[in-house]
Length: 129
Image (cartoon, rainbow, N blue to C red; front, side):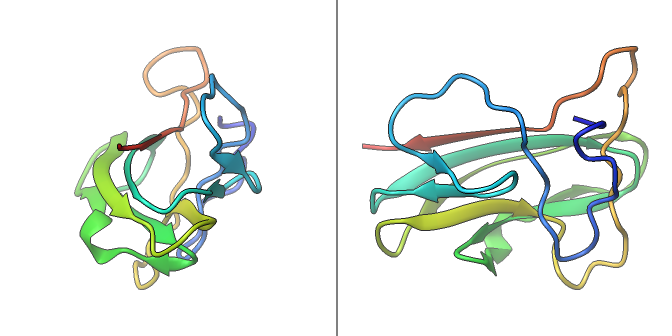
């Protein structure tokens, strides 16, 4: 991820997830940082990113930040992760992970996170039935 997130994630912008992992179903990537949820319903969304600074991340739905999805840490260099439910207002909603508006710190995706291999920022989106 670090070579794919070379610039800090500035306040009000989204974390990039430019590499695809295994996929199932009809959730569609709409960019390096956004995903379309084609079915109206409730989704479980889990995300994580190793960052250098203390900070926060949250989810957006159709560009609007969801205040109940803010996760963060106060000190150190470690992972920010979240796991929450999101209900879409209709079909084709778009979701992303954002450095929340109003924060003061840009976030740097940690290059190696404790080892020699690039650390991964990840997102898992599951439609609940």
